[in-house]
Length: 118
Figure 1 (spheres, one colour):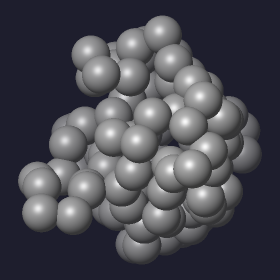
Figure 2 (cartoon, rainbow, N blue to C red):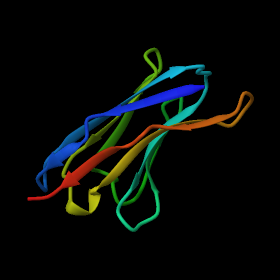
Figure 3 (cartoon, rainbow, N blue to C red):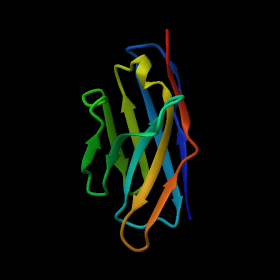
């Protein structure tokens, strides 16, 4: 079992910044991908950014150039630095950890609310 705990959400004005963090604990195996998804009211959950154990990253087009994902493999943490935030970034952000080889797993955090509003 892997537990993921997010922190760092909140209310920010348009153009502002927030940093989300996620700490993983439990039966963690390397390599595994970590990342962030988000879900806005009335919309499907969508990919925001992912990062592999080797540091390869992938971003949704809507956040490229504004968000940066990073991880610390030694501490089993992943972070999402969000700059130039827009009202359309408002959503619940979920951290996840995914491993596609044995032992396979896919775990999600409880989510943290990000609200971008003036």
